[in-house]
Image (cartoon, rainbow, N blue to C red):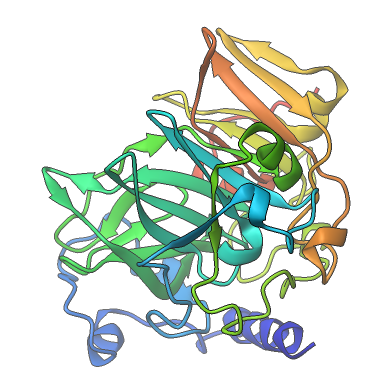
Length: 323
């Protein structure tokens, strides 16, 4: 209940004129060493999300348990399944909801596994840029309701939904998106009983398994968002955003649920049995949302299941396919 009251307070602050606006002068006073002379977005689009820098702490020394040994995660709970070279891991949203970023090495390669609850965007990136390995944390800022990350090497700010540096010396650089997908923990455990599952370093640090954003994905409007809303589809409707390398392919989840979807060689298949992480106060009891698998020529393609308002905010000229 305390977290829900806190979130409501943050919504009021962010939507009250003048209270949440800031800029380079104020950010420098917060201790940022970011090069604010370089940016690719208007500063007024970046607002406070409430917590300070690293107030939502990233996971920098991830701990794992074997899937068959994990007993406190519900079978329908959503996890990010990600693998490289046969090293397939699960990152439960019950953990990432409270941390948002896990800096990890999978098959020896540096990756950032990220989740923005306000956008329901679960995305995995290669942490290498120009031969440099970056480590990411949370700025405490939002743009279009989406997590703004920062790298600890240059303190540049990065948009989680796009993987692009938007402020600082890295401005214009892009992280490589890596294919991952949301699956139920039960499905992961069945397919990979010995697979590593991210577990809290300190189980008492947060109330893992509880959703601090209860009923968010059935809200009429998004939190901490000031932009335009899409037409012909509710702002909080789930959509699949397929990262094609050019303009993304955006399809409503309801459309996929009704019979799948194929276009330009991309195939989206719906799978039932996955709970929403943003519905019930207990994630394990969340309403059915399901998930998808996206392939092209039989190979997995980077994608995520987000809200319609997010897809519209970052790709206003790309139509959302609803029928």
